[in-house]
Length: 337
Image (cartoon, rainbow, N blue to C red):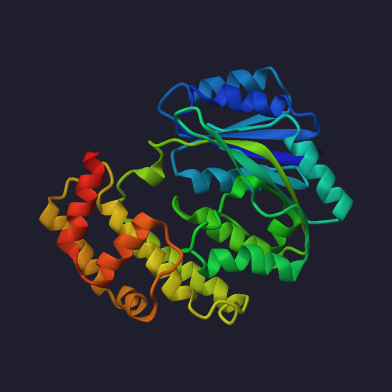
């Protein structure tokens, strides 16, 4: 019975999964199992995973039809044997002391979770550390204020608290108690973190960057999503359910407006993402229709976004003023440059 189960969804990752696996094998903490979930890959990822597992009994491979990252992680959760759960993406990696450090700070604090900073690896070779929180031990009230509330309703002012699930060590027992799983392929990590940390008791944090996040401009979050409004609508439904269940609305009374404004800004950017074949007139019509939706119109009327980056502040002003032609021109110039 391993102490830590590391879950890695793999889809068409033949070029990167071996380096990812080696980062786990190089851990100074050795009491782990690695679950590689081959999510219907069309390349040789499955064969690479099988070869790596043949050389290390701590690696287990699961092959499944393609169902998306949430279904892959859920299979990993249901199959994990460890008392503690960690997530790792196939194109990322751990620093050698990652699991040991998370284990040690959690043990010393008697916590049911641990977290670390990470390194952003940009395509131009830039390496940028990003903390999750200041180092320390956070009780339930602090967890709600520092993690749950930012995920609930602080989605505009910079810096936005990111819902990266791979910066944490989770209690498998707590996950089973609340029946927590993933749903969908976008913003699913934010909801997972919100629900988990609504129930967590203590969180131990280190500012040491122990996870290596390889920024990929071609990832799903940077391509056009034709069904974005449907996906975002389901995200808001689930967030509403969490807010009711854990009585969160009093902590951030304008969380709906704040979240919907974030959705507006994402949706506008999505209209100009690579892969959208709409004409400029069709894009302007889509944005006009988006802003007329009751929940979005309420957000625009009730809340003036603050703390945005300069570019997003310009977009927000154009949206509030219904200057859709200027907005279209702005994005076409941006994409051209």
